[in-house]
Length: 273
Length: 176
Image (cartoon, rainbow over all chains, first blue to last red; front, side, top):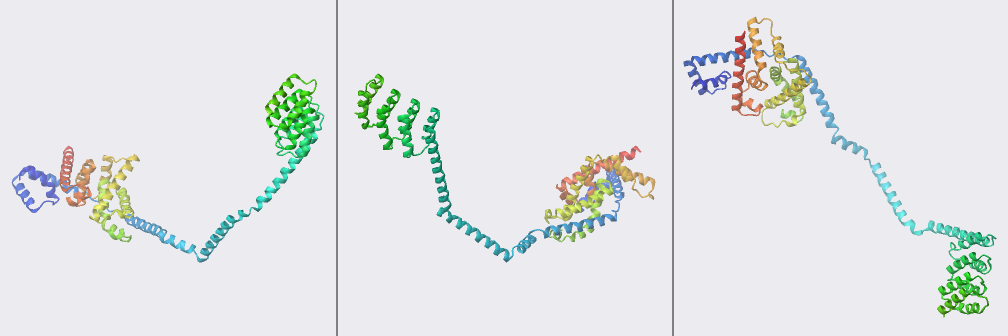
């Protein structure tokens, strides 16, 4: 073994990490190499000096502190362990008594009863019927009030008010005899041409009623205003009212009939016949 | 330790009695401060309790203890660095030198102070292997397990550390 090899082994030699054969080899080299002996001495000096550095005794408080820590840790650990599943199940068991189970079952029974009852009850429709009846009564009353108002308005001296009265008839869902009579009277007798025209329009809307149709036909001969005559002729065409042919011819025979009205009526007669 | 892991925390007292002195020695030689070392011993044992589930039982308890101790040491040094309480080499040597018994001869006292200074000048890594080998009297294979390395690497590290220490110590002795 050479010097380098021995040098490498010196710390191991000192810390007793060498095998017996290695140690013997190093010893053999050391015996004949002064340089290595010196090196060993230096290393050994440092090694031994290191050993002389004393380790102070830890203070007794350290032990006390350790046992305090261990104790508190143990307690905390046990507290945690207790508060886990075991206690949860226990508390659940305490809470879940037979009485409670009965109560829960009973409340479910009540709930399902309520649901079943709620499902069957609307089939009888009692509240709906009463409600509908009330609505019907109310709307009938409103209708009657409208009629009253219309009839009284038609007597009003102001042409504007009478126009408004006629326009109300559009809101009346189905006009009764009194309304139709009032309208026909207005159509035949109202002094204002505009009111008569609007009345004619309103009556044309109600032409599905046979009385209205008859009234309109009869009204033909009574009209003197060319505008109303022409408008009536139009309505007759629209309604395809054959009964109007006779009064129309009557108008043609009358003296002093407007030329324009004459040609219009001739056209109407052609379209109807 | 396996019994501690199973919940028998009182067994921890036994481990403390058996190992606290060794652990304290290691931390003291690494940090150079007895008070800090005592705190660190406490921390190591606390972590043993807290992280006892990480102890697998493969390998010795002592190796595990040194693993924890090294981590605590790193944490403490980092904390001190952060709080500007830096480990100054001269400061470290002075503090160790101050703790010597009064009846030592002046010459011997000076020699020891020099050696402490030299040890303090080593890198943490070098000081660690020397402390483990010289003061904790651990075999190379044990050191290798603690440092998570091979026995050969430990051997090389010890040699380098020893040579470095020898150089620092002998030159400072000549300078005197």
